[in-house]
Image 1: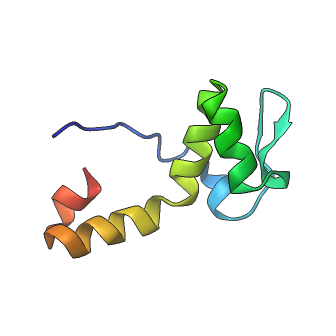
Image 2: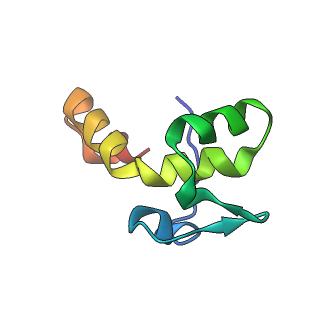
Length: 74
């Protein structure tokens, strides 16, 4: 199992609905589908936006699967 390091404070605004500007893009104005299309084209910053936006839901899902908080967060 691998571990992905995610900056906890790099994209805090994305969770709160604030406008996040990275490379001149207003990510708050893009739909998730549009962000995924940008990621497919090689824009890795969009992936970070989506990870941070859905981090809580992903950890919750993994906790339900593993019943172990440390594993879920990893």
